[in-house]
Image (cartoon, rainbow, N blue to C red):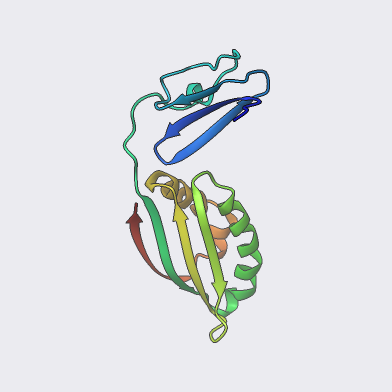
Length: 150
């Protein structure tokens, strides 16, 4: 096998990341972020950016259920939902975010969310409270269940 660049593989509890450097032909395997602070090319590796303290892998958080939108709020909720989805999917730790309007009951929206861990989910909840979505959705009736997986 011919390796044309330096690849640094760093094990993080819930992520596997690769850093590439064009000037090296060696393959490096790192099992803990603190093993190699810098790759052989003299560039800062992802290990330096990661917290070097050992971390316990945390289960992902899954939220599923539905919301009922009051008739007077429906148009505003549908309009802001586009932005809310975009912002949520761009949050670090968000794996899945789906909100689908019902076909039989247009005031019902099915919700399914997955976050890599509890911290990511709680950061999402905190952001939502002070967002435009938080204001527009204040009167929504929420029916959710939460579980941890993995």
